[in-house]
Image (cartoon, rainbow, N blue to C red):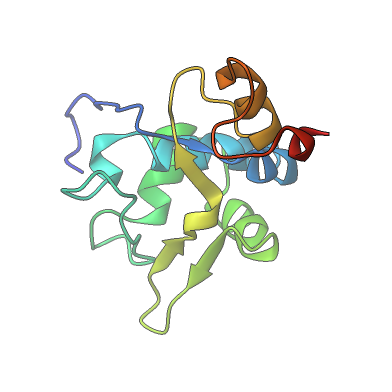
Length: 133
């Protein structure tokens, strides 16, 4: 991520409901930024591994400071590690666990029961009528 450049955002991902429930507001903001700001996504638009070393880009400190310079990187990191949202690899890089974010599909209900009710015309395709009870 180059300093002085305007951040560009994509809306491919969103935090899972569990991650949104578990995390404090500052940590939620950091995760949202990590999964949507182009500077923190790889060429396939997946969140990159973050360095703990400020000399390498992108780093966790750069991410946290991009969200809010008042946030403490160590406090955010400790919460993300404690809640199991990230994993610190042997080489010191920080990996955002895939279970933390899902595809952002407009009007897509996560609950299978809701999907069945919304998409059923005269019954669920491939299911017996009694399966819906």
